[in-house]
Image (cartoon, rainbow, N blue to C red; front, side, top):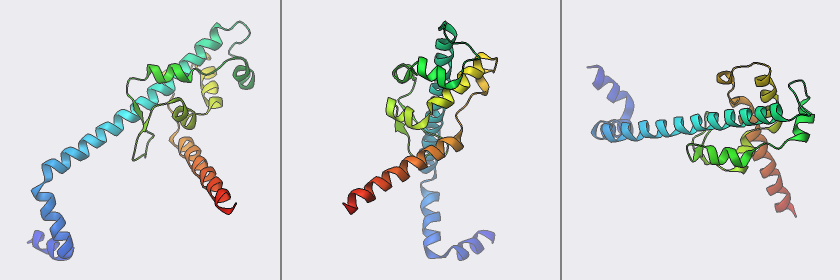
Length: 165
């Protein structure tokens, strides 16, 4: 009785979608589950690469005689280079994706530089040297989203300027 009431409320198109889903539920659920697992692996890979970068910068700061954990962020960034290439090579999975992303991106130096700010990585490396636990270090999805929005806005602005010329 409830089913017939719901079918009546769905209308003709809704009933057709419901019947299609019922006929192909196993395939549809498998695809959705596979996609979710893939995106989880992409996010997990992003977190691993992020932590790898933070640890590598912390090691470099620790081993550098001119730097220590009390060094300023600006001085650290002037003295060392962030190992973007090593992070790409050390990644266990070829794709990365941030929380809320519908499509992952292939891991590359450009993608990592788009996702991560070098100032933020150095700040976290200094915190790590001061005793922070590595498990608490994760990329901020809010900052990541803001960085991506800024990038898209800059691209749109450049396209508008090219169109006007």
